[in-house]
Length: 185
Ligand SMILES: CC(=O)SCCNC(=O)CCNC(=O)[C@H](O)C(C)(C)COP(=O)(O)OP(=O)(O)OC[C@H]1O[C@@H](n2cnc3c(N)ncnc32)[C@H](O)[C@@H]1OP(=O)(O)O
Image: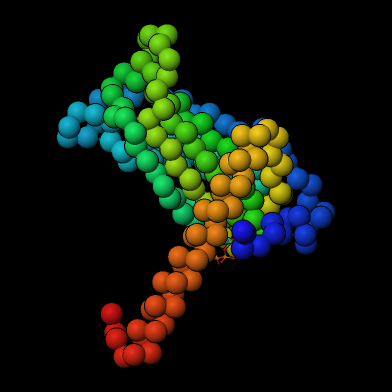
């Protein structure tokens, strides 16, 4: 079940859809001692910055202009990243709404000077809103999934979207109810 049909599909036929592959991007970076936390492994915040950078590039490419991070959820770290790891941050648009896009990101790490298989060290889902020159949301092209994997990711993103909206609505309703009961918290 979805909360709505993507608006690009229904009320903005003048914007042609774009395939997932048109904006898919990989950002790669070698981790150094500047990137470590107090435990000596790479700081999660350093990885999150790369994730936001890669996702922002994808959102800008897909929407054809500026896009801002609206939310980042389900950032998961599976394995520690170490100094000397070559980190690849792979990002693609999973889903589009009227003015927002969900970008899925996979983080892989391999030793910078060894040809061993890369390890999947993290994943994240971010929502970006495309904005105009005044910072107001603007319409985005509908994303066109091309492979079975793209289609699965699109369907999973719709489920996350439904849950994000339901969670936001439930919290707003609770706050309104408490305010009506006289709570000032
Ligand atoms: C790349 C960077 O580093 S940017 C820096 C960090 N980010 C920012 O500064 C963004 C600050 N926030 C904002 O400017 C605004 O809140 C915006 C543009 C994200 C949203 O503006 P609003 O006036 O709330 O617009 P609106 O409610 O229409 O939301 C726009 C779209 O974003 C989606 N959205 C807004 N907030 C969220 C959220 N917290 N989580 C998920 N989606 C969201 C909406 O569902 C809507 O999508 P749709 O049109 O596809 O249905």
